Length: 177
Image (cartoon, rainbow, N blue to C red):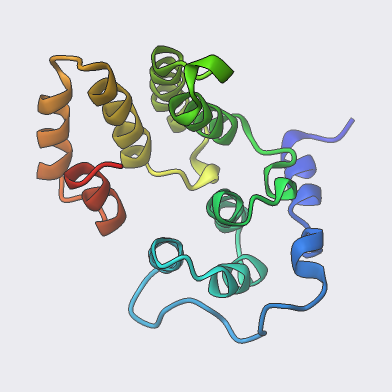
């Protein structure tokens, strides 16, 4: 029986999902010269540059980078193959986001979303290979608390801002959707 690592490595083989197999993304590396892989991905995600994000996905050198690129590509492309066989932390994150944004008549539940994000915060230390930064779990938990009107939401927001998070998260904290 294959180990979890072997399954992940097989799943994240160099063969890209169908969306990228036709060669629609140019070959040059997409990492910005002044930034790390995750910074470049966050920048391209913020500007909705799918072509650059697909290049990053194809050029990913580690499992962590491939997972992070898949997670960022899904909401922009809506290509479900990016979600196939994701590790538990990504499932918690995507499920929490879906519960948060979906209308309650269709199964949305902000309280349930907050439970997912808090669970994500607890399991992230056991899954460092996922590439999901702690601040991301914290920001999503804050946003659910904010939407619910929790008294502790403002304090958590100030604490997160004091940690000087990356631009994408700082922007979300200062100007939530």
